[in-house]
Amino acid sequence: MNTHTGSTPSGRGGVDAKARGNERLALAAMMFAVAMTFIDQTIVSIAAPNITQELHLTSSGMRWVVNAYLLALAAFFALGGRLSDLLGHRRMVLIGTVVFVVSSAMCGLVPSGSAALTWLIAFRALQGLGAALLFPAALAVVITVFPVERRGSALALFFGLSGALTALGPLLGGWLTEWTWRAIFWVNVPVAVIAVVLTLLARIRDVPRREPLDVTGAVLVAGGMALSVLGLQQVPSWGWTGPATWVCIVGGAAILVVFGRYELRRRHPLVKLRVFADRAFAADNAVLFFAMLAFVPVFFFASVYAQVCLSSSPNQAALYLLYFFAGFAVASQWGGRILDRKGARPAMKLGSVVGCVGFALWAGKLTDLSIHDQWPYAALAGAGIGFLLAPASTDAANRAIDASYGEVTGITQTVRNYSAALGMAVFGTLLTRVTVDRVTDTLQAKGLPSAQAHSVAENVAQSITGQGDGSAPTGSGPVATAIRGSLQDIQMDFAQANQVVFYGMAVALGLAFLCSLTHPGTRVTATTPETVTKEPQPDRPTSAP
Image 1 (cartoon, helix red, strand yellow):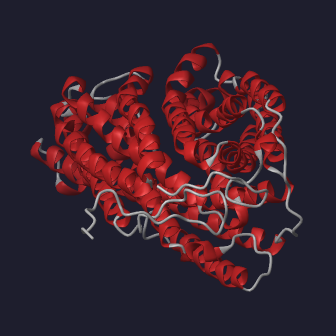
Image 2: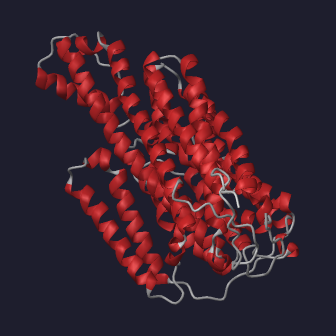
Image 3: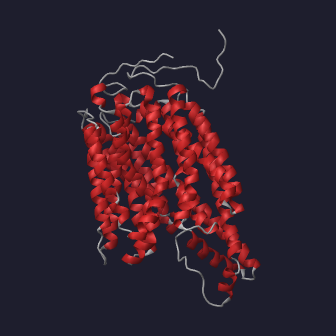
């Protein structure tokens, strides 16, 4: 293998040894910093009932509290990545951490009364902005401080921990909520202090770039991403046939098209779109897009399935997810080693195949209504994502133009967040539709008329997916009697609906596999932009001379 290990200030290695600082301290600091952002993606959902009750919020208002964070995160990732390159990665980590932790503390200090909803939505959105500034910079720091030959293993640990923390969110949220739901926000304060101290001790040297910020491009991409993601988030409320849904999705897509055309004419664009001309970079992002259709939504769907079909408590549902992350954590380390030795293509192919098989086998066991029958397949599905996540993300970052690591990580994270929003919308709609159809058949078998059974089934579907009143039916009328007499059948109906969703996730990983085949198999083994070693692909035999 022809590996060049020198480094230049502007090359793929990014910086010299002095600028790298203390590698271990830097990695630890970045993992503490991003820990907050990943935990907060899922922790608030567990405390939602308590927040709603104490602050007298509506269910739709509470959904806005949850979605405001994710919406701001998707809208500002590209800007955060570019600012990281212009101002310095270390500086943006510190700025993002401060913005995130201050807004977290303010969320925990929300007053009661009419201003509560506005207060929470505003500071949750500010949290999302802080995370969007922080994460691309943190990832760029890890890429910068580790030489390319050890970068895969370092980022495998980085992504493995961040993925595990996403699953820890519901479990931690359940424990903290028993004390006070405000603690789910305050827990970020000590974590942020540790992250800041370690970042300062690591002595990472910033190398800012003297280029103007493309403000117009930032406004366009933020507006386009926010509008389209908003449309996807509101599908449960507005429906796929609602005019507002398509105004947002189509309008957002149109703005993004305008953004792309504008960027191609700029000398210093917010996003250098020519990076997509690199087949490997395009393949990396395509694999991430399809993998994230399953990776983020599985938290929600598996958790709700466990609570409805397995009668689990929220804490037990979080433990159910740990099987998935046990596989994820182990495989992510293997994926990083495969990347370091053989490149991204073998890891992505292996991960997508393992994930596809894992999700398909897991789906087949959902109707058994037993954790003991499911955990090996949940772990296998997690292992598939673990094999490919760090290699695809790292390989994409290694192909940064002129060492613009923050910019490229901003692109990949935008792709990931947009895919997650799309997955939640599509699979959520599929879950609701199949649940309604199956519950309608069940209630009709109990003697309810077709129209009434369908209406009741829609209310049941909304309740068990968190969009309606989840209280048990009362009274002695035919509807209440039919529902109470069909609870076990409805559990099975919901399990069968989840089965369709999980098969859909398996299909998404199958599409990720097809995308991995388009990767040319080249490896970034050099630290200068001009040198990209193209080796024979290890998974294909080379012809004899």
